[in-house]
Image (cartoon, rainbow, N blue to C red; front, side):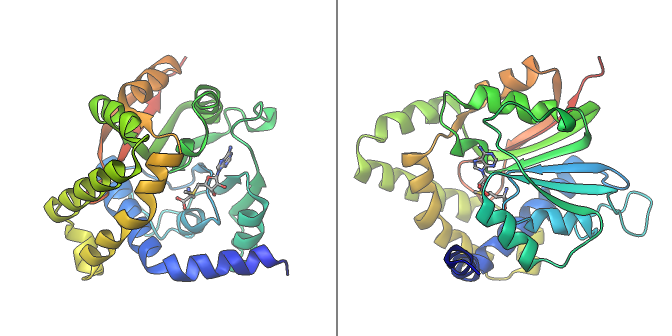
Length: 265
Ligand SMILES: C[S@@+](CC[C@H](N)C(=O)[O-])C[C@H]1O[C@@H](n2cnc3c(N)ncnc32)[C@H](O)[C@@H]1O
């Protein structure tokens, strides 16, 4: 087994508590209660799906809304992922499910034609902000081209209000100011938010959220490419998607979600 497998294994063990809260919170509260999305018999692409944590939970019905069924089981969940390490780690770590597939895929490349309009549901969580600004429009177009007519798209990412976006761009040149701003903002969000489901399942969720701001948002905002909310709305609109709902991800500063549906045509 190669070295990077063990490196990743260490990272995921250390981050596991946070990840479990993050994904169960997002998928439990957000996907189910906010979107009302039904996954039964659907084909789903999880784009930039990492090791497939979300993918395998979807494939096994763990995140299901139970839309009239005992458990919602998708027909097919495909984790589309660019990193070979993520792909091989996921395949080795998770129990094989007959409706779960992993496939090498780069959002920045021309779309593989056999994937075009193949999916009822597209999910992409915390991926596009990894691509630089010159790649994002094409990546977004690729992402949305995976959806069938009438397809649904759940997008969660580091997305900033326009004014905050401008401010962050300015603060990037001053690391201390950026750090202070991010910490203040994250603490404000985490203490103000109500987390009914998260609190019920994970009583220590607030400590976990307080730990989160120190780790990722500073790096993400400084070194990566957060999106601007009006740009996301425009990209969805230009690709023929109607926004059904959008908003902040409670408890997670700088994350927003969009749930949209492709207009038939
Ligand atoms: C922050 S992780 C999120 C993983 C997963 N969506 C989740 O929420 O668990 C970002 C993922 O996007 C993948 N990624 C980055 N750039 C990509 C690209 N151009 N095409 C496909 N996947 C990409 C990374 O390899 C990584 O697995």
